[in-house]
Amino acid sequence: MIIQDLEKAIEVEKGKIKRIYKKGEVKADFKFEGKIYPSFCDSHTHITGLGLSEIRYSLKGKKSKEEVYEFLKGILKEKRETIIAYDFDESKWKEKEFPKKEELDKISRDVPIILRRICGHFAVGNSKALEILKNAKGIDFETGIMKEEVPLNLNHYFPPSKEEIKRAFVKGQEIALPKGITEVHDIVGLKNFENITEFEEKDFLIRINLYVVLKNLYEIKEFERIKEKFKEKEFLKLKGIKVFSDGSIGARTAFLKEDYADLKGERGKLLIDEETLKEFIRYAEEKGIQLLVHAIGDSAIEFVLKTFNKMISKNSLRHRIEHFELVNKNIIKMAKKTGIYLSMQPNFVREWQEKNGMYYKRLGEERWKKMNLFKTLLNEGLKIAFGSDCMPIGPLYGIEGALNHSLKEERIDFETAIKLYTEKPRKFCFEENKRGKIKENCDADLILLNEKNNLHATIFKSKIFYSST
Ligand SMILES: [Zn+2]
Image (cartoon, rainbow, N blue to C red; front, top):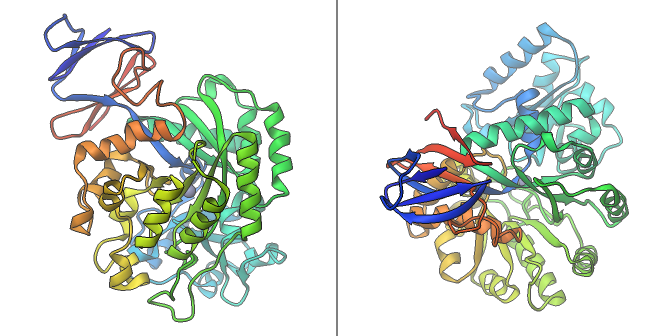
């Protein structure tokens, strides 16, 4: 099949780019007004979580507490089973405040209810839910507020069935593909890793590069056990592991050098100590696998870079920091020295970095100006790939955040942004010789954008999927 855009024609055969011609040089089967790019690869996703929040309850798009509570009451009229509802974002609500335990108790005293914040690091439960969680860490039983442990591991405390997980995994991919995403870096917990190991070839609709979250050094053993039975598939590869060094700005658990502007005495904390992080780096280096470290606050990022600098000289395994949001000059210098790879989320800028938005309130003006410095970091020669962390998923949605950055000097142009969502993520997962460029013998994983830069079609596995927009 030969597809042609306004500049060139591409011959696609058996899913690969066979030859590239000038426009008009050959007779095309499909002619498009627009431009063909490599397809998107999202460098930070949680595909099962994305699917679960669709097949379970989602609070996305709710505009007020009242609306959320009415929604919960509606569910309880239908069935009286544990309610876990995902993705509330109080910064978008009329009231701009977290849900309260007493309010949830008024909705039900006998059905457990847990509402998880969109960042995944924060949740609130009613008294019944807290009863079940009485031995868990990170819970304030007075207020019902849960940080880190429980919200990040809801699937552990309230496990979805195997069947539900598989359905969610497929659903998540079905959400991604129509957005031009044919490949992701999927970050999963150990249990999910084990489930995915048992999936069949037909359950993989797009290319999945897996990264497994390990909570402590003991989990390495479990990871090794599951890895034994892991079989690579055409669309499934295991690429590395991930650890957390701090939380999120929204939950005020990102680890900062100074207090949160809107909560004196609070500056988050490290979720990992130096010895443990060193052990993880040692393990990754020994096994030749990539290590991803979640770090958002300036203090956490500095700690992670310092530790890397002590352990490695050239970063040949392409170890990464995920998010890398709040930085300063010294951090940038250290990052260059480490040769660290950075997965960043332009959609976070769009969602929360507007003036007077959530980041602005949490951090104050001065630190708000040091968040997500795309242009500065690129000018410094740092390696960045874009990803969404599914908040929400959608590269073209996210790219808008980079083009219209609230800090004007940090805006980047469209072609650069596209590269960070197509070519770079492939480099980040060692697939740069196979995909991410329009080059002969590369996989023909392509998208077609029309003249307004909207997605018109996705070309994948020698098939054309048209978009509705
Ligand atoms: Zn994530």
